[in-house]
Image (tube, rainbow over all chains, first blue to last red; front, side, top):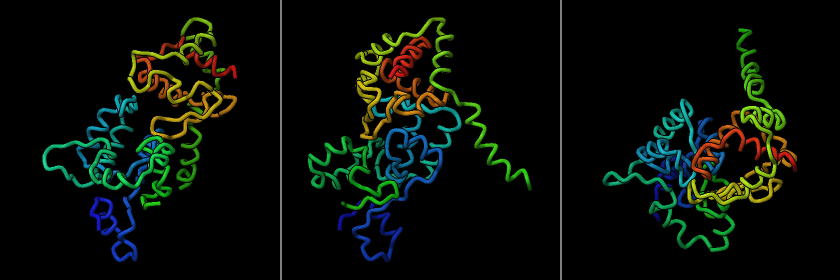
Length: 145
Length: 130
């Protein structure tokens, strides 16, 4: 069995489920402002995909967010950061790593490396586009389709 | 107790009343601010051009919005971007806060600076000509 953050969460969240080894689940965002603002450009990634320090840096550098200005100000920005940090994943880094791109994380690469065909990737256009393949991604379900 | 029932309706009504506008009203507002008449031709040129002052991944408005304002574009994330022309997408340019937020972000991404009122008027004049 592959051990990934996904499965670790799935095992806790769905212990006793018949197919827990196939169920790749990460609790989806439920916070209204986070849903509204982040979904403007991409799927709203579950907070558990990154550790707290990553969300802090992410929310402090929105003026250059993966090559675009996604600036947010005032209360909205602070509220979203607080939500993401409070619901972040476990810090798996041994040192002071601050991963920002979920698709660069080792478990992500491992899960997608041999799974995704060139055609599938071209259709999705970007690793950011989870729901191109994972139809229930917005509900937190990332099973292989 | 009664005001608890009234409050949600008041909250729903307020932003619409405070923010709502129309492409024509916004165009008039930006033109007045610029102190000049808008030019759809200049707006088209600005929209279509490749710029060098902004972020390298977004050299042009067309990077995400395509060269056809009636078409659905695509963000770099793969997410669809609804058409910009009000004739194709009646929700466009009806919410001042939304328009200002995205001119702010996208002008900075593409040009590396804020757009002037004159530039916003020009682009809007072009988009509203479809």
